[in-house]
Image (cartoon, rainbow, N blue to C red):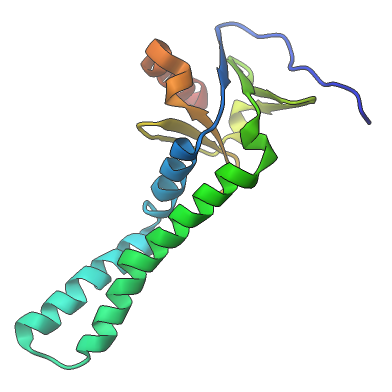
Length: 167
């Protein structure tokens, strides 16, 4: 099916955004997503508090505490960073321009010759980061709209997204 798909016509108020997703937005999303998870926040707290407590009390298990802290505070962020850089470099989607249209019906995306139309009720969560807005369609699947591409309309567009999701 080599047919080129196009997004639907806009319904009501709408915004067109053309964007390339760069390594910067991808990394911001990965870190923003992973470090807002409750389990990760608990792991970070333990990785910081446990070694400090052992040092203050002069307790046992210093090496175990330092190893845990090193994994949580160094290895996991390094892994995120490496994964994000690799995806930005090797995923063919990130070499193309994403064409978004947000309207009162939902989010529409054209990428290459494919098109996705997604109603607002299919977007389960939004995350507004400094460099991108993430529209989640599942626990860890999200569409990224770079802030740079929204330009001076960033605040207006993000407010529109919040209003449409609240309906």
